[in-house]
Image (spheres, rainbow, N blue to C red):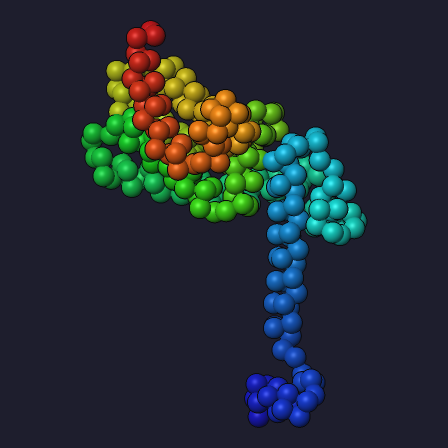
Amino acid sequence: MTDANLSALFADKGFSPVYEDPKRQSRSKAQQRADSLEQILDAAEYLFSKHGLYGVTLRDVAHRVGIHTTLLHYYFKDKRNVFEAVFARRAGVTSNRRIAALEQYEKEAGDRPTVEGALHAFLDTDLDLYYEGGESWMNYAAFCARVSNTPDGAALMDAHFDPVVLRLVDILKRALPDYSDEDIFWGYHFVTGALMNTLARTGRIERLSGGVCRSDDFPAVKKRIAKFMAAGFLTLKDST
């Protein structure tokens, strides 16, 4: 009689099965550990997005999860380790999606890429991911925006996002062959500044516009940002 037959027989008689598959048990423990890690990282992500690295303690994270602080040390060495894990958890997803979008754009554009087309591939993909991903992805967006202008965050941005940024820059150079590297990189600098300000969702645009614009309206941003930034790029040649 198989294990499944035994389990069914015992269940029919009102008893729990005597034998439990060790592999099933280990998978259950692994899933429990994965779920606990997700809860910790979700809590830390939210808190870091609001207060940054130095405004959050491990006690704050533990309190939000509803566990004792000592349990965090079972999973993480220290707060910086938590911070780096929060950053890395979603970084690969967003970076890989943008790389794929840029590769697809290059295939479609062939020898005639445009600044606006490249920016759409780079920006729209990210904005869609954050907006459609729900609260957790919006928290990650705000987290990246908050920490990107700090030494700790900038080092992680370098490690995780440089390949996709340099891929964009390469396309921009081909779209603007007469432009200097200096202008291309300054142009990217201004693009990323606008993007980070958008991802931060500070609410300032609501106050300034009297509610006409909302900082969480990423679809409205998506309709405008690539076109706006492309126009800015095209004026940079006059700066040299």
